[in-house]
Amino acid sequence: MLAVSNLSAGYGSFQALFGVSLEVRAGESVAVLGPNGAGKTTLLRAISKLIDASAGEITMEGARLNEVPAHEVIGRGIAHVPENRRLFPRLTVEENLRMGAFSSRKKFPERLKFVYGLFPRMEERCGQLAGTLSGGEQQMCAIARALMSGPKLLLLDEPSAGLAPVVVQSIFALVKRICAEGFTVLIVEQNVQQVLKVVDRAYLLETGRIKSSGDAAALAASSELKRAYLGL
Image (tube, rainbow, N blue to C red; front, side, top):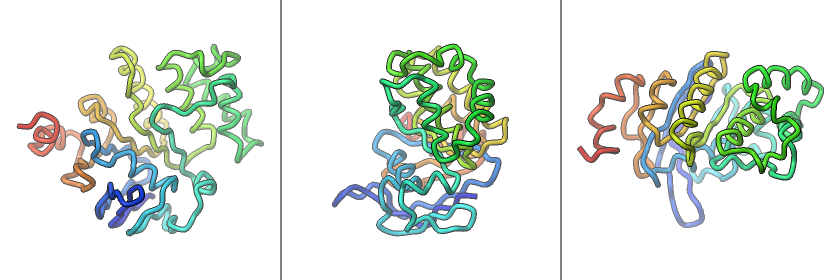
């Protein structure tokens, strides 16, 4: 479904990614792991065209995305849940969800019903201002908003960041359920132990380069991962 080939990207004169290649097949859940500064967020921003690649190619279902503007990416079936949620804090939960369905407004009622089935708490909070939700509820709302577009590929950027441990557990349970619903997911995370329990495969990204990849269980036991996170 998604193929990234020899991708390089950065910000101005600063290069964050160096020849990164990965793929995500339809129906898979794939994680990109790595310490702070590894380039994980930059990778997702390049895929969703929030920044331009300086080299390499990104394709979605065989169609090249390099020249596609950011506002058209969602029409190609890609929804991005950014780091720190980026909700509209002065809009209600349901208004945020309506914004997620902006590109396919006719399907709003059926998608809202589906999302409320996945996230009952969001239905309970539908009239509440998004900015007054708890951190975990805001993350749920951000994921729900992305699902309202009916994506073929869901990009999740650090969904557990800044959340209490008990809330982190519930967020990863939701991610696992989303994967079970058949969505294709690419998730970047620092919470290695939790994310490797819910994905099929993973890539280890260090200083802008893919260092290793493989089955989630195998990577969890790999020396590369222990070295990256534990210095062993």
